[in-house]
Picture 1 (cartoon, one colour):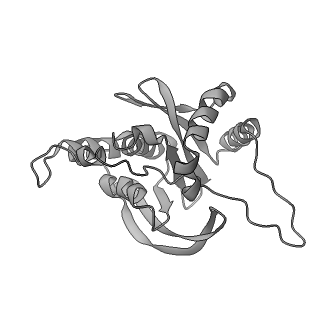
Picture 2 (spheres, rainbow, N blue to C red):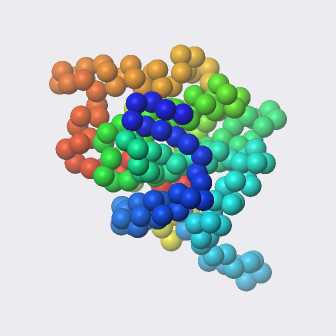
Length: 220
């Protein structure tokens, strides 16, 4: 999937070096929003953070089972982030949820809204999902602005929903159904981005370059 300088493609084992480099360089940037493993219960198994290869193999297995769509994000030819559609459910629900993270160096350039729009259109039009949701910590303002720019609905709060940065954290739920974007989410994003804002500037992404902000819900 491609739109201008933004490319979404399946994650590969040979992305390991580039993925690790971006992840290492953005440790402090990503840590507050990344999923962590909760302490084991007395009768439960002890879980460990997977290696890159273990992660990719797990993502592939889930993809082959129809439960996940794992991608990396490229911008101007280099790997800058990761986006996964997970929790895909069929039957009477036909739903999935999106999680993502992005390199701080490209924040404010419209990379993440474009990537989310691309994958949402793919889910609605090609995969056949009916509903997409994104769950974001209330404190993660820049990530919330991604879904707000795209027109996702805010549905409510899920208390202590995911284990993030060492504790169970509340998350806001944003959602979209196929009927809400008959023209496609990417077309909506392009239209909104090109529309003048109140200051007369074209597109809200201009202000995002002045002060880098978190453009992902890393680890969701």
